[in-house]
Image (cartoon, rainbow, N blue to C red):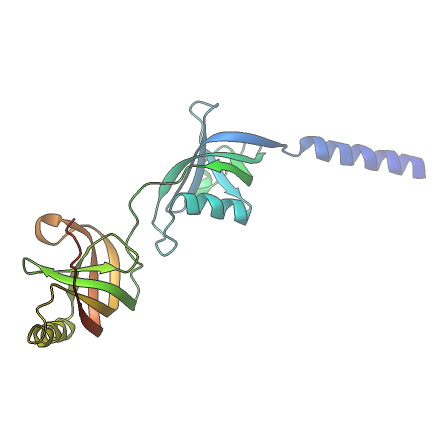
Length: 219
């Protein structure tokens, strides 16, 4: 009886191992969007799989894609070679839209996205950088960034900003200022005159303003 139980157990274990998805290497396009993570393999024309995986592997892909973690609607797509396990046929992903799912265990290579960086998250916070008026338009460039933001704000914050600039101009005719703002920043397709600026900062409080010698360049 014991021998029969051992043989039966071995058969069940062998069958389970044989049915488990094996680890493979896939090359293709990894993409993320609102409520979707997908992988489009090169070698299987017309197929697109739902994607999930180990947290470290997914973080590597997201960082390569320039994922904006503050924006749940942020999306990107990059070419990658990954190691993972492909599921049997079924219903996977958002609303069961995909017939297969790949579980990514390791990222072998991933291209780095060259898409423009998004603006800062739309949450109340402090921003430090350069502020300048160009042709009557207030612009702000956060420290460490190359992107100019169009400046707007509540009435009292803008009045305070104008008063501080006027105060400094009586002593030093500076073209630009080192500023610290409290406010919100958000992604915008086109803002300011002629839609020249894709981001805007909404200032709620001016925390500091000091003249500097050089103004940031235009877009």
